[in-house]
Image (cartoon, rainbow, N blue to C red; front, side, top):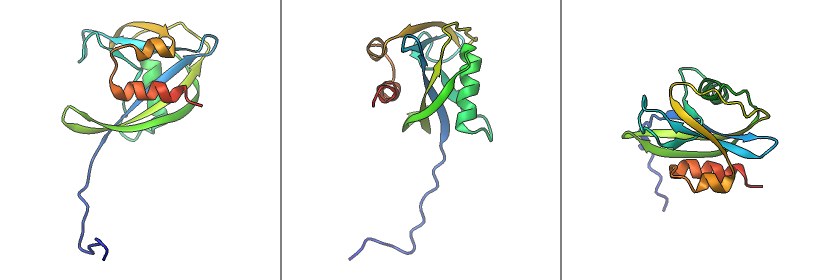
Length: 143
C-alpha cells in the first residue's frame, strides 16, 4: 500500500537566497578571502565574497554585483558548484556557491570588509569559515 494521500497539501517554504563565490586568481590559482569589518554582523570573521539577492535579480546578476561591490573585481567563467540550505537568523537561506576567475589581484574593499587575502585552497580550508563555505571551496577544486 502506498503512503500517497490525495488530500495532502505541502506547506509553502520561503527562502532567502544568498550567493557566495570562490574567486580564483588565474595566474596563481589562489582564492580571495575577506575579513568582515566592524560595520557589519560577525565582525572580524572570515568570509567569501557574496551576499543576498535583490528583488527580481538572477543569481548570476547577484553574484557579479556583490563581487564588484565588495572587491572591485570583474570576473569571468562563472559556474555553480554547490547548493545548500542553512539556518540564517532563524530563517531558511538557500546558498548558491559559484566559482569564477579573474586575472587581477588588485582588490578595492567596500565598507563591509576590512581586509583580504589571496590564499591556497589548503590555507582557506584551515580558516574559521562556516561549513557551507568550506563545502564551496572543496567543490571549487573538485574535478
